[in-house]
Image 1 (spheres, rainbow, N blue to C red):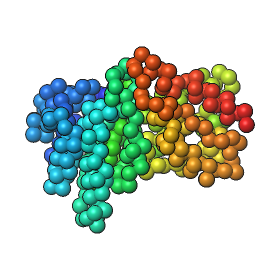
Image 2: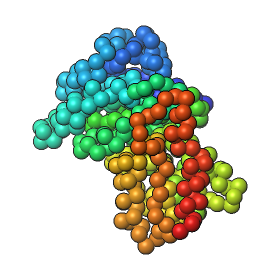
Image 3: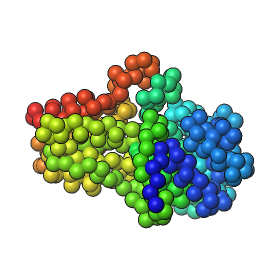
Image 4: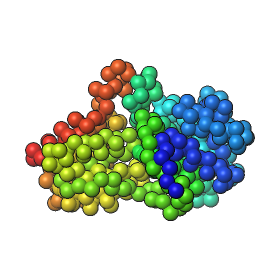
Length: 328
């Protein structure tokens, strides 16, 4: 039975199912218990599962992740909430030096089934350190898997699939989309849903391939709708997984369209867009009618809230890139 849920409620429901399914699942983070998290993603979970499974931690991100490492070694499945994207950096040492490397360091004897939830991206009028896009740091780190949901259905299934995985996963949640609604089939087994580390074509098209993930998928879909009025057909692919990348559908699409535009909020310099452009150029060189173009945030620190809309990629900037692609 499908229900219409917000993305935030879909995450909440998915976490509830994960807690019900496995008594070794624990949720940890700042204000995740009584308050239910600053975005209320864990609302009601401590009341129903107790404060030994939904744990309010001190304001110490490195302590949260360090504790999760110890719990995971002893057989638990910790789900750590980093309250805002810009707060993850104190935990960066633990994530890169311990979480990412323990499996290799132990020659495969030790697994760390840790999920690190990070609300990411801008668009909510927040102050400094609350609107970062740190995905490239983690996608670059061998030993970590990185995924980004973009809609309620994916949020519900992907969080359960991530918790069930034996690998450490950085789980990126598009905070500006928390309140957007969509249909979610609550009766479908997560094991039967779209695989966690697989991209998906969310709108078919014939003229240009647009690659996006997280909060920019909606922007890309809006651009595709607007482009249709000008007689151009945009195919939109939601990457969903940033490490490992699943580019099979993108390659197939670009070989048909001959053009590709990559969209993400993070700055362009050494971002995911550069890796995507390189791989598509290598695989689809003889099919390309134009260079792979990138629509991204600017190479500056995230600006003050009053001008953030000037920084964020929007429909017009995506359409401008489409026009430039046809200019070659």
